[in-house]
Image 1 (cartoon, one colour):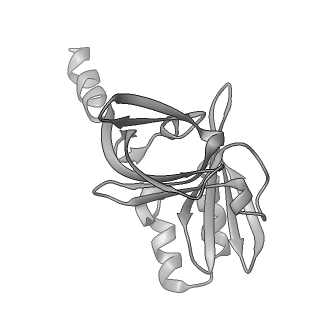
Image 2 (image 1 turned 180 degrees about the horizontal axis):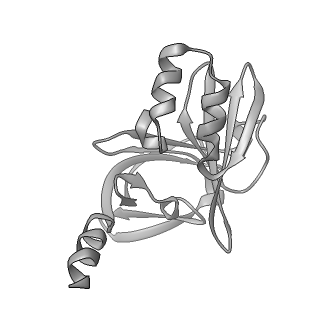
Length: 169
């Protein structure tokens, strides 16, 4: 009887692997490399493990891995959205670290997230406006900060309904 409740929850929250077309540039070169990246999603949300510490790619000879710290730029997309990651040296306003920043939203008010391991995977998010970090937060608490900061009424209505980053991306 208990399995009737547990099984659907497990079924709908399973981690899903996807192989997607990707482009990347290493820090020591300016060449753009087209590749296939191995990604992980759960409920249509990218799992940060995809890009933390090492990034798994697939080519005709098999799998190969790159250190996250060696990558300057990475982009890929699935049927739901495009993903763009930049090294910290491309974003001088944000704290320096060896990892990549996910460009979640790019515009007048931009949102960048970084993923790091501190026991488990943690998220730090930064909002940038007019070449200045206007606020930052741990995890997805930045959604509430966006809600309080944004003055645009249409966007504000959309943000108030948001419960996760996928709700407004």
